[in-house]
Image: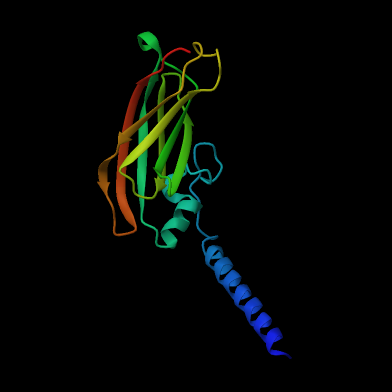
Length: 173
């Protein structure tokens, strides 16, 4: 075997080794019990919070996390409760970012829980996605709110529970 063939073989074996290590690492998380969310999909969309497979994988791999509870209310002019407004919570900055989406109930309230990297602020976007239904068409609005710690963590990997609240009044288009 030539020296060039030996180098190629060594590179291929090294790549195969890295691939196996990566697969074995993620496979070790496969037995974790997911926490079903309200839609019954096993928490894989990020709304399962503390028990979801993705969140447990973050903890298993030594990534500091925090639990974020985001809630509030959306109204229209005159205090009308707006149902079906899409609420997108954005955690993090440009270098890392996670989002979670929920919708307002018939009272205009929303609430979501997500476990993600620690952050000082959460940006929340409110979008009327149903057009004229539920009271008319409203312009989108985005707010950034500070989060406040409401529960202590249990060590360096889980840094605690944080809450953010937002109440907005959407303007008609």
